[in-house]
Amino acid sequence: MCPLVVWRFSDGKAGHDQQSRGLIEALARLRPIEAVELDPLPAKVALSAFYGRQSAVWRALAAPSIVVGAGHRTHLSLLAARRLRGGKALVLMRPTLPLLLFDLCLIPAHDAPPTYSNVQVTRGALNRIQPSARLNPARGLLLIGGPSAHFTWDNSNLYRQIAAVIAADPAVDWTLTTSRRTPLNFIKYLPCKERLTVIPVAETGPDWLPAQLARAGRAWVTADSVSMVYEALTAGSAVGVLEIPHKRSSRVSRGLEQLVAEGWVTFFTDWSQERRLHRPPQIFNEAERCARWIIDRWFA
Image (cartoon, rainbow, N blue to C red; front, top):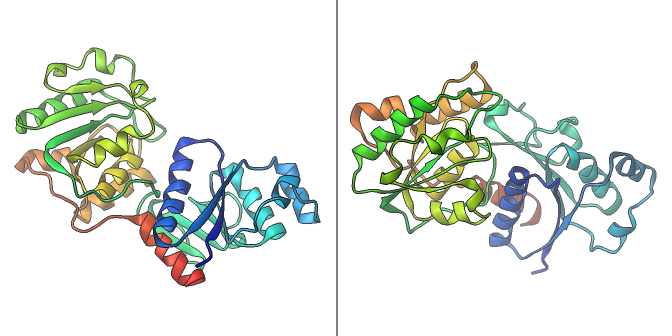
């Protein structure tokens, strides 16, 4: 079986790379692929491709079966690559350009995508996490984000929630990590540091969180860190949401509320009534589901 040649355009943003790599790795589990990573062209250079002026770098590459990218800076390069070298143009997240320009748009449900034949709705952004068979109910993760466009912050309220979670499961070995948005004083004043292992984000590498999620039977994530909610669900952990004030109803908060309504995750307020977290009701692996759809539609 000849490998599928996949060109992946990267804008250098870690979150976008997680999505596109997650899809490519899922494709590679289904079919042999040859992946090529490329930087997006400057907008003027990409536009010139539509007049037949091809990048010298691209001429030396095998023609792609698929070109894929996430992030605004990749959009014109995806379309230019398809025009000059062929293949299917796949964009992750809702593009800033018209959706009908792409062969496939993989868009999270919370972005309210329209019903087009070239749109596949996903539950959250794709990621590189795989369902784990090594989850240990005696291992727990606390994943702390920070203030964002949709959420404010309240250290004292979070401390209260974290203390309650730890007290409810004294036999659990808890590990807490932060994010780049976490306020600098959060760890300094965390009152229960002696009852958990604290690993600041600066001390973690790109493989740290996947390795932790592969073993953590339960994970609590602050409501602002939606991508980590979906990563923990993909691993198969029982997922709780630590509540923080949101500025207003938004696509992010509505997406979380939908996950709660469908039984995927539990808000702290609901958990506090019975002190139980529930495992996901079924396997949650959006990257593999989308990869199978792509293979079945175009490359079966």
